[in-house]
Length: 365
Image 1 (cartoon, one colour):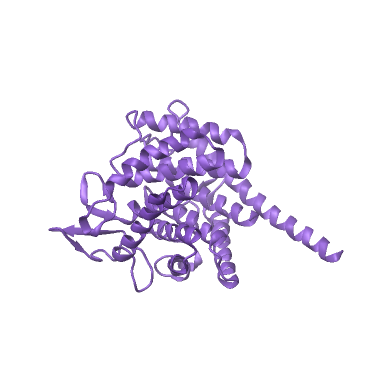
Image 2 (image 1 turned 30 degrees about the horizontal axis):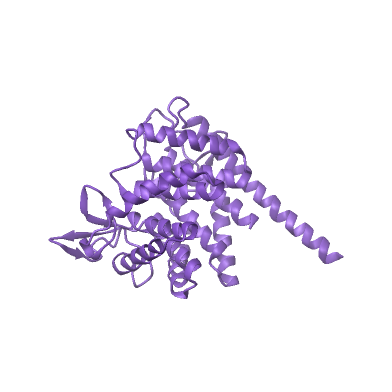
């Protein structure tokens, strides 16, 4: 009887922690929607200080966190806003879905695949399929393969245009069981491991430049960003969950461990580094999204899983205790110090919400 009562109390404690993270995420959403959302045009503005620019890929991640909110609460308001956002994005994008950046299309396709899986709404699948057809055109023989970053710059092959595509291909295979999707995911994986992953420690370089048709291997080794680590390990994890081949998990785990344990380049003081405002404001949240999936589905050994979980919780505590400006509930990109003013980019707010949603998911698992 005592063991049963202990289990009930333990589960209740876990549920309470999950609810606390969820409540914090709700506060983050409230700030995002009251300070960045355009009621008239239905998209998230660049910042809350008067820059109303439309950022396609930031809004794609906004779609992703609306899916997070729906999965956590099952409230229809998240789907209603998702539909408004998609309509607004299309209008702001010249009444089309295509973008000059392949990675921008990929972020939206990822969000829509998740929305389709969560709801069965075929509209989401149809738009994701339209984008996927275009994305696949980005693979060229330049630099031995890989998907281009920009449609107008064929000689730049980037981690941000290959890691997300690997995840899309693998998830499409899970959803629709088309063998060509799995084959493409493996093809991207092989190319990225050869050209963009540091064999010494598993970190992922940003890109490989091509000069006179020759790949300049590791020409920019100093450029390492958190989101590229996240999509690489996320793609490797997807392939592991499909094939159960341990090499994929080993690669995902190696990169994740380096990020968590490197206190100079990635995690000073055990808190994921800030990567400034603008686009960099989103990078950490993207890493957290796929890192959390590794914790949940990576079949990790208990000591490793425990260390990863505590590292993630420490980041969440630091964000809420140190990196949040109250009462506005505006996040800082550093997660260790509150912003000096409430004027911040939407990318930073979205990244913080991703962390809080990830922690709710982790505690509730």
